[in-house]
Amino acid sequence: MLGTPEGDAQTLTEVDLFISTQRIKVLNADSQETMMDNALRTISYIADIGNIVVLMARRRMPRTASQDCIETTPGAQESKKQYKMICHVFESEDAQLIAQSIGQAFSVAYQEFLRANGINPEDLSQKEYSDIINTQEMYNDDLIHFSNSENCKEPPDLATLQLELEKQKGEILGVVIVESGWGSILPTVILANMMNAGPAARSGKLSIGDQIMSINGTSLVGLPLATCQGIIKGLKNQIQVKLNIVSCPPVTTVLIKRPDLKYQLGFSVQNGIICSLMRGGIAERGGVRVGHRIIEINGQSVVATAHEKIVQALSNSVGEIHMKTMPAAMFRLLTGQETPIYI
Image (tube, rainbow, N blue to C red):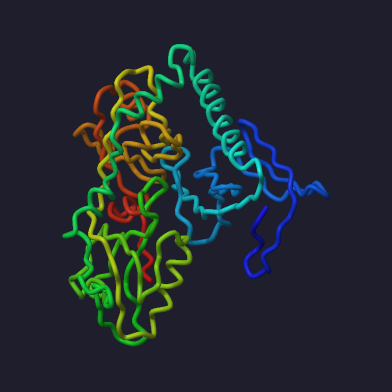
């Protein structure tokens, strides 16, 4: 296995790899000590390139006092789970076989998922499901926005960044940022709130929902939320801030195409918040994002709708299912459920 803890010299360690429908585990070949143990559902990317296997997994970050919540019971405080992406690189003559084995584990796990939900896999063969997936276009609200050059606030001359904000030395930028959500085409942070009369609001150049690509030349793409917050806090003693952003509305549009009730949507909801997403399913192709609050289903607001009715509405929907969602943390800020902590 290639890769070592950050700051250490790069080394090559011989390992044993175990793959099941539940987990992917890596043991040191000599000591049999566990070096990696990830649930299969946390694996977000797998590829083989020659004799190299690349595997990316989500890992939950330690809790902090400033973390948000996802509701577990009606009226309870919502708890937000922060994740970071871990990239594992393996070298093997059987790289292609390893990648295929992991893919097969996902396939078998999917069959078990169907049985657990009372669906006979023979009624919905993998080929039939794959055929449905292949006939559907990938719908992603971000992709539509990024494809429109008017939304990319970046001048033709890339030597200078697009937005330049003036502020007093010692003054905070006056913003609240949240994660774009697992499933977004570009993992970065979203502007969720601005302090009245703060530098960001005074500039008149930023809007709620804007995705921040970089600050003072430092890319925020792929960084954990806490790291991005730290970068913004570090601007306090500066009098000028340069940003590269993509202008986006605060609400994300989702379009799921479900030809028949026998096809599972492939995501789960808890009190209006999307809490899990099946990789490669019709929901992922439709732009569903983990951590987002469902605002609207097929033109009907579900903001004040009970959990059971939301589940029922989704379970009984066929054809094109239109939804509007936004990051749960942003929803709480905009509806006054949470007091913004500006940075």
